[in-house]
Length: 315
Image (cartoon, rainbow, N blue to C red):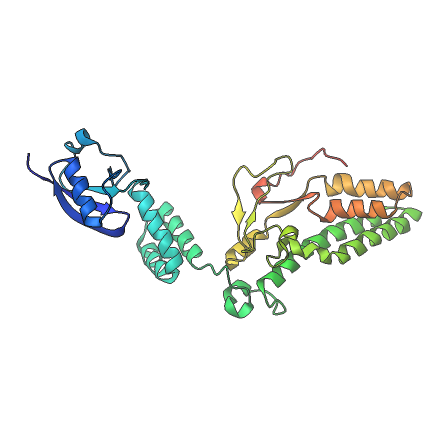
């Protein structure tokens, strides 16, 4: 039998070479010589899907079959894995070039699924996660007040705004009370408000520059959904980095800080009971503050994981 021609690759470089061999042993020997690999433990796999080639399988392969030679300890998961890895490496090495190529492909692509993939790739390539100051990522700040000089400034404000909205809801409940209860309720809520102000409205939860134990994201600003109120974790692996681009910043506004023990159904009625029974010491202030405004009772959840049903949880 004459020598069989192959297109041979290696993890040692990106090029493929034409090699001819009469047996698997000869192919391994020539490949090792080409890339100066130790022959012991080397094996050959199909480039396409990573199937390992043995001596018998060797003779069934077509001419010019694409294979890859691996030294001991190396793994190969197939050509698709290789291509994706190449794209990822390009993404980090030269995202601008990748964006241009993807944009050109998008203009000609008719397939809806492929267009979505290209659009996502373009979006990811345009991320500027490391930028913090306004002048370094002007697009991220589009539509935001000029008083926000850094991304963390805005994200801290955004979280604080949510806390203020919760506080307003608690305050407004006093308007439906009657008699002495109105003043007593308002006075107690003001103590809770004072405690919230001391914590600077817990804006640190969304601030990637805050100390690690006080924020809900990593130091790059990446957030992970904590799952619905009755779950230990998110079953969908939802995650987002609102610091990356304008679109993610806007999408993140739809994520919820969900009260496990419900604000309307449980916490506010319990405040009313405490005021009615004049059980309103500093311990009660701290208790209601924590359940209204801290992660002791709040879970950050993607909108899909925000179950709008009765939680049936109490203190």
